[in-house]
Length: 170
Image 1: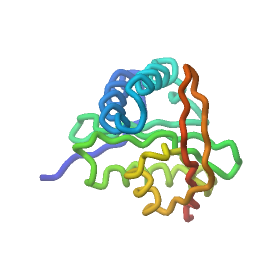
Image 2: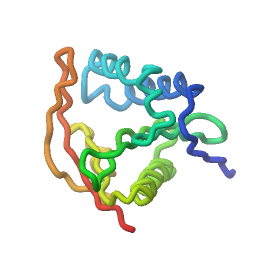
Image 3: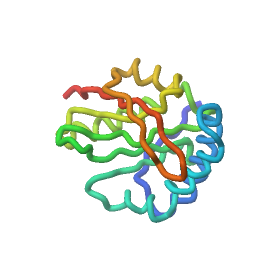
Image 4: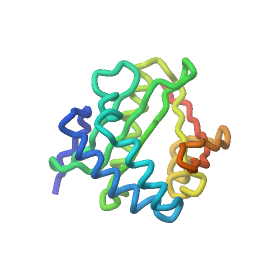
């Protein structure tokens, strides 16, 4: 059975959908890496209408909602990096039941195409050091660890991450 798959630009009508997706995905994925209290704190801060609204009509950041047969299944976002040759992959999330079907790769290729269109040949991301499955996927996709970083995100929480980087071919 063929599936209809789209990657739609975020609209204000998608805010609740993305927040619900994030809640489901994060609780299932990060629950063994960080505390539920930290997950609550991060979700509450990131998925507000104000923060999501920053992706609409922006010249510096973008978000797409992945839909399979019209149903939201994931989302991805990217932004201009701090360095002039870089794009930051901010988010790439997929519901567990859709993993292993090439949809994460579709989102990754979309972000890589954006890198090329922006004339920025370097793609980077941050990933929790305990997120071994995602790290393995990124390594297979051509990323390498550039550095280790610890970010204070407030309320007594930190993000203990790797910065991973990849050169995007022309």
